[in-house]
Picture 1 (cartoon, rainbow, N blue to C red):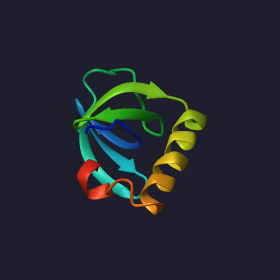
Picture 2: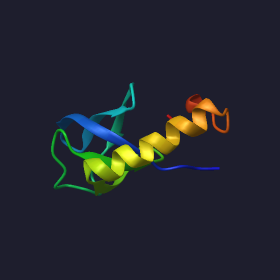
Picture 3: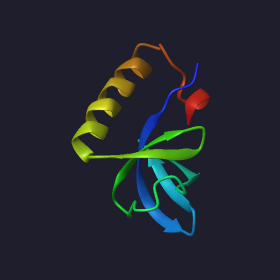
Picture 4: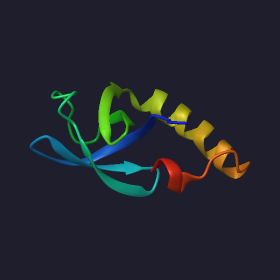
Length: 80
């Protein structure tokens, strides 16, 4: 199963960015969303930002993500 997870963009260098996945930081590719800026949220799938989302939508999704983690329905290490 593949999930797309929201992440906040911490820094951008060329087509790469450092993204924060609710406490886990990873480098991602932002070539598909060239207008993204630091501080915005993106939906990230397979290491690529595929869509910019507003903070409210990102936080709602992260709340669901945390609930799934707490119930052991997913393992964060498998997706982030």
